[in-house]
Length: 157
Image 1 (cartoon, rainbow, N blue to C red):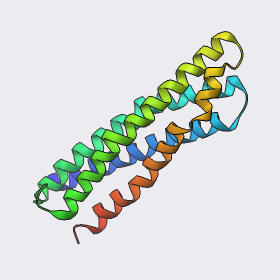
Image 2: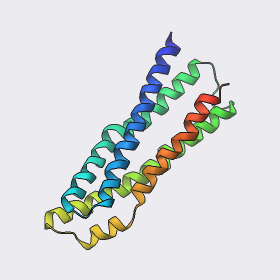
Image 3: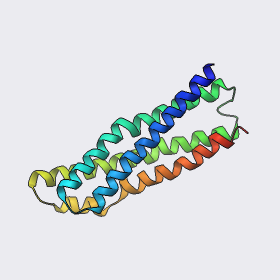
């Protein structure tokens, strides 16, 4: 019974994480693809909002519920090969990709806010938009979820 509850919570957290990746990547894509400062401002604010509400909590909860679920199922987290690989992939997502998305999004948001305050695009905004780091790493987060799901589904078999 506890295993079923933990599985449900883990799947819920995983969907929360996926919603966060999509919720950050799509507004960023919109911000990079338009020239309107107003649309860019709204898109970057939306991506920033979803990063704090969906992406980061979803990533943390997916990892925590995963640890509890696999421990409840009787797997040793450090000696089971596929579970160790899953944990390492998750840590790369949490400790490398998400901070890079955060830093890039913060830089872009600051540039958009400065440009919105001035009422016209600034050189800092042009420079921040020329770097597509947050968009690239948000997309990489989405692709990174494929091996995580594959190991979770096919690893225990």
